[in-house]
Image (cartoon, rainbow, N blue to C red; front, side, top):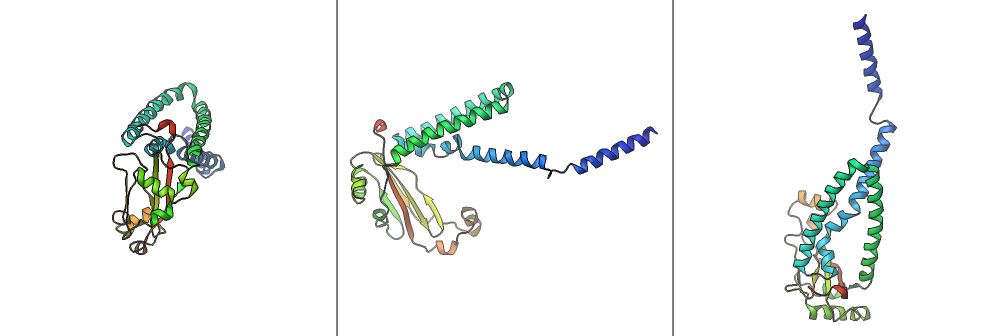
Length: 243
């Protein structure tokens, strides 16, 4: 009798487990919410800052070496704060950290957006002038103070308004369907050169091309002309012109 009861109990348990599908609403909804929260966390906050940290610091007024040193410092701070979060998660709980972290992300991203807008609202696009500098489908620009003033002068009054002071430059370019951007360079750096060439940029085979742009036409890109989509010159904030 005991063996029969045990067998029936095991059979009923198995049936209940079979009915509990992972596609059940009570499992699917929390899973989707978790994925959305994780995606939003990766697309905002410290991840978006770390990815462009050196470029942000260069455009904020630091030199190349100082900007990369700042990248190291920020990474160390991020590591230290992660350890603090690990300790707090057991004491305060995940809900507390999620609430505080989300509030912090919102506040500080709004602050960062305000700072970016203050400087980038004065940014000038010298696309046509830089396009005229393309030779043999290659671009080489020595972005020094003289070259910066020359490019800004070609942009009219908006360009002249930010001339005669340190600035940064980023070129957005494309060969066919493949698009990229140069790193930011400052007009007062030692070697502020911008180099763009097809070699080393257009993928060598279809496998690499697929991961770069799955919808791109590789064969067309191998002969497509160099197109300068943007040549953005941004003034360095006056409070950080040193270094």
